[in-house]
Amino acid sequence: MIIRNKKGYVHSIDIAEHLNFSRPSVTRATRELSKMGYILIQEGHWILTEKGDALAERIYEKHRFFTEYLSSVGVPKEIAERDACRMEHTISDESFQKIKEMLQNKR
Image (cartoon, rainbow, N blue to C red; front, side, top):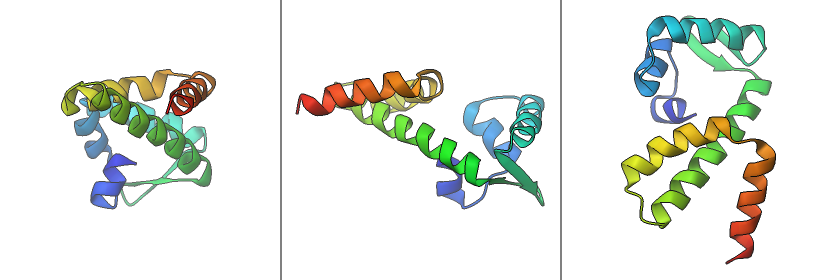
């Protein structure tokens, strides 16, 4: 979502550079994501399927939430974004929702 929102398109090299992964790692991930029905590759561009777009939206919501929260408690923006990238992929939807609810109820 981040790359697509910035550039309007996504190539494997963009993902490799953004995540600091090797191109072969991204190629392997591409095959798996394609098999699972999350992406299509057309003319070198990654295109999210409906299923892939829904997953990306959920992950991006977590990214925005954790970046904002970490920044609000004094974590420098660059570190907050880097940590949010790690957290968004590892936390379950259930745990994320509970943390979000707890913080919203404190306001």
